[in-house]
Length: 192
Image (cartoon, rainbow, N blue to C red; front, side, top):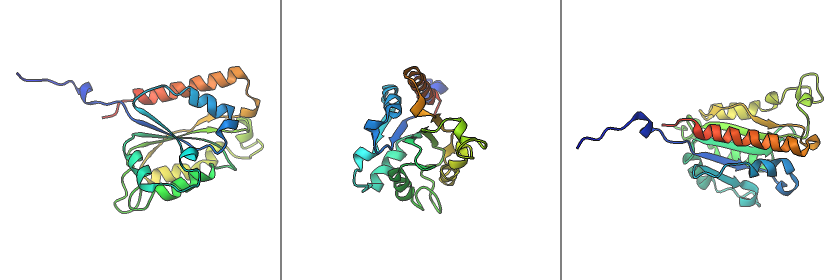
């Protein structure tokens, strides 16, 4: 008996890796609410890097193996001094090695999506050219975009929750739903 397969049978749901980098997670209502909104799925892996590496001793080979097993890499972190928390910077420096992530024969991350879910105390207006920080938040994120591009990754616009110190309960709920919907849309994207 001959079997026929539909094209859709060959398409799999993408695997999403959520890399949480927050040194004081217990003090962050915004990040806690975002985490609580993540849908339960076998295709989602959530890792708290500060819990895994409290002494900043990163297992590079393990991290690379985990990256290889996923299609979407979502970095969830607060905005620290126009950048990311120190463990995330060290993770990038150590894990995205020359010859593995970029450079000669460095194509291990080719085509994977890079997304950042970022919380800021400053409001959306604070991150405008006429605002307090004198630049758009995307300007500060250029090093991350270039890192993703160097690693042949598909850099996506960041998911931003801004002005977290002024948000009310209803605002947190709206942002959590927006985050959940983003992750669901990533899960629904065809990958094959």
